[in-house]
Each structure stands twice: as C-alpha cells, then as structure tokens.
Image (cartoon, rainbow, N blue to C red):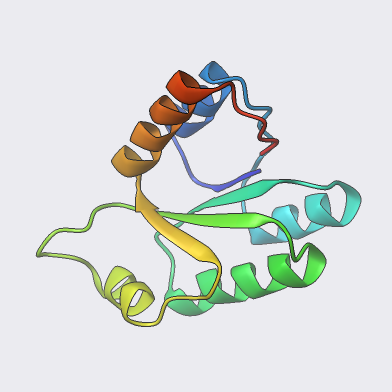
Length: 121
C-alpha cells in the first residue's frame, strides 16, 4: 500500500515495474480503512507532515497489522534536513525503515536483479 502524495506517481510506477501490486491511498484514514479490509505485506508512507502525524499513522497501522513492514519515504538525508526529518531520525520508531526516494528505488532495482519480488503493497 502506497500512502500519501506522489504527484508524478514515480514510486507507484516503479513498484509496478518490478511486479508489485500497488494500492494507492491519499491519506492515513484511507490507509486504515484498507488495512481493516485487506492484508498488506508493506505500507510505504510518503509524507511531508509532522512527526506526530506520521508516528500516529505508524502506530495505528501496527495495531491493525503487526506483521506489516512500514517504510517511511523522506526527501533527503543531507546537511540541510527539515525539522520533521530530524525528529524522525532522532526518535526512530521500532520496526520502521526510513529511506529516501532514491534509496528505495535502488533497493527495488536490487531486489529485481536478485529475484522477482513477492510484495503486495
């Protein structure tokens, strides 16, 4: 499940190009509704929101499906990182991966080279 704003649909297209089934939802409320009805292997959160909103989304998703992998996609990890990203890195949420878009795309490329993915997003 791909949660959040991806105006160019780059991540959605990239996941689909490696064979993943993608359910795209606009916000956390829609994500909760989908997770209540369906089982997902992975939730990818694309957010520029506050740490509290992202943390709340992560904890609620975990309550609904404790085995689901949760990946938070952030803009970048350079010297000039925003306050949200700094907070997320300083206070990581257990069991959640934080990656940039570029890192995620590289990981997807590596997975495809190694073996066909078995993800349902």
